[in-house]
Picture (spheres, rainbow, N blue to C red):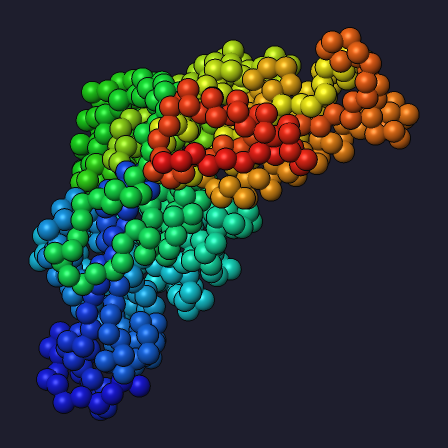
Length: 598
């Protein structure tokens, strides 16, 4: 229980019971720290999460303990209302608060019951000059079993009135998928369990990627919290998370003067030429539909449809120009035209809140890969297209027809750039990857040149068809061993291949390359006659016409590492790989490593 106190009673809350401190005393003991929530692509601060500090001064061991005791003693609604005032005060003291959002944790137990003051939180926002779209209520599924139907409806009413909703600690409980469906939140915050060590746990990365895809289909953004290392950050970015938060970005701070507008150390690298071309293609296909504000009247909406006869859908935006969903013309027809022109119900429909017709729509950023846009669209049901944003603000609408056109053009370009034998990216793609590796200095980069040993005598003895089979076999193994968003594999031509990694440790890369080399050595033996397999070599002419013994097919691998912060020219990379090629063939294990000096 809370420690006794002789403080004055709180005028805005219920009468304290004997031995229970009033809300004013609790608030005086507490403080709020604000932790930035940052755009994963630009490093720009998107919002701040208000985190309670000094709970121990109230007699509670933690924030959860504080709220549990308040709930047990019957004054949780008044406490949470007072806490919102305190959080808003701290938020408005930030010089960087303008244009950002306040994320406020709402316990939610008993919400909407017994004249709950939390249902009037919009009045508090007016006092502080905040709009409801600037405040995101973070709701956890931890108390889902105690929430009544009244509480669910109350939360829905808060969202309908304009508050943003975040589903907190997603993945912790067993009912989050149901909440994601029923609540239609604007944000999904992934539980820390799935983010800790995500860079080295493929199952966790698969889970986060799947949740991110699902959230985008439902029109929600994904927040990765408690990010503590650069590797975790990069893995979350690759998995499709939109926003990040944690000690790697910035620690929570109670000092308003420490706030920044952006954090440069997490800004994404400049897209290469191919990605820029794809972004331009997406931008050129965007439809500039008329939009309507979330708090507009029904008459405003009808006027838009009347003056835009070709528009069948209208994107709905909040005051910050962020999309809240779409309104479809067919939904309005079924409601407005149900009665005759003199029908009182039909007239009353004009006063019905516009927001009641807003439906979720798939959403993606302008920087999204075209293939991911296709996955997002294909996973949605009865969707007309995808809302496209830039820095989370509405940019345009990508129709299904335009998306298919973009994918078709991309496939044609990829086909032109593929090696005809293996289907792997060809010389053009290899050159682009080397150029990107040369100028991308945010992390260690590793370029691997691979070529076969003793391929000519094998080809001469067994014929070109069998030689092509060996090349195809290696290409399939290469694709299995070199995977991930920050990796690359290509076919230069003949028996020469390229693999690359924009992140990772050199020893880790070398281990993967050794595994690839062993797999090829084992699998290619089946291409030889039994006598050659038993001998472990074959007799054939060398390039000078002399008969000699040649070992069975194997490959040599040169690994050149470009350290973090060290730029290089494409000419230097090519020269260094050429020298390493000879060193790799001269070593017993067939692999040569080198780290480029600063």
